[in-house]
Length: 538
Image (cartoon, rainbow, N blue to C red; front, side):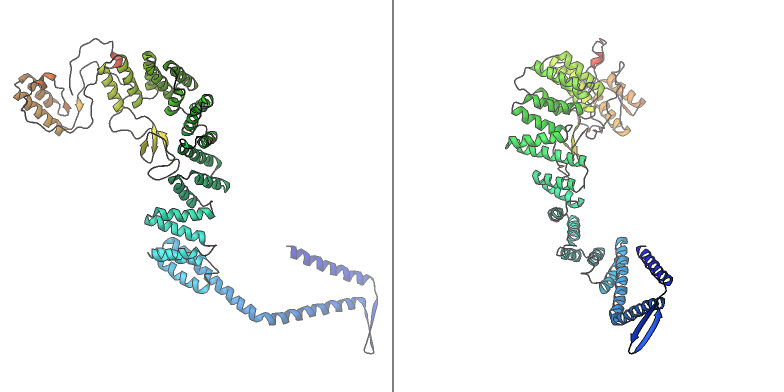
């Protein structure tokens, strides 16, 4: 567009010049070799322009003839290069589609038309063709050759990394990933593998530098980078807690500053502050983390912040936590545990039952069983609560890749992935869970469903035992009930078992689907019920 405007401007200027000469007539006299030539100014101007144009045309023709060999060779060279790039493009498409034969054919064709030092993609296509043909050794050699070329070095490292992963050589894979991450930390595959290697070796400082490099190259978002830094700083504080308390404290405080709701960071920071008698600051850190998300480790450390406190003081601290996060199961459980230590059974029972109403789980029933045993010693009620705990959902724990841990860890022990542990309930145990509206029945104990074949074998065993013990009434009752319902098991009295002779033949027990408690005990809700019931074993 600019050239067109310039050309139009030149033409316009020439037109103005000729118009100006036409309006001002004059003559030009030229004397040459004894002759005089007299012409007008307009004719002279036209003659000058014509001469200049003729000279330019002659110069262009001479230059074209002089450069014609180079022009012809350049034409064929460009045509050859275009054919080579077309072959390279077709070969790359064939490699992506998995056509090894066509990829190898186009590789040879492109190599003839284009030099590999001019186009590095030929080396890549050659390596891809070798992989498609199953020549992994040849592909590795080509990838190693790429390491000598700065432009192809990262591509070669990527290929060697994938080959090492395919062979299962984790050390070699991490070596190649580390070399790539040192040159280009923005590469996700290299950075993640190197980060796993550094965290696996406990090199927390190196891992922190890598995360900073990822953040500076905008590979990960700011929140994700802060989360990773908090995890790594917490791990560093845990590693230095016994050797360098000051460095561990600085790391833990920075981790807590980055993520105040991260419970492991808050626990480590508060523990280090408590060791240095800074109870106030440590308590504030735990309170902030408790407000964000209650955690039993926070409650345990907060309640026992001062080892010399009396049990009533610890109970008051637990109640303070409950005020910060009301109507939460963890708050009620923290108060219940502190009340149990203080022998305040009424408060402990009330808070444990409140926790069960908010979140039925194993730990709440176990705590209520401890309270019952400490207060009344009623083993029947204790066993009933223990049976409910067996059937209740499990308590939350640190879970990563199917591994359940009592303590938080920065990496997964299975995959080595950073920040893999989550605070959640593990997979539920098999069997029926406690119903939210479970009540103790007033009538007889319901029969327990079982497969037909095992029930018949059990019935026969009981029947033979009863006949051997000469208790016809009991044996007749068992046979009658099993004929009426083959899929139910009738409770057997203690007298029938007492009369079994010692030399009786042992019988294989029926297949058991679900392990049941030996004595359900008495439901606490029915403690006032004075009705007598027949004692049964099942």
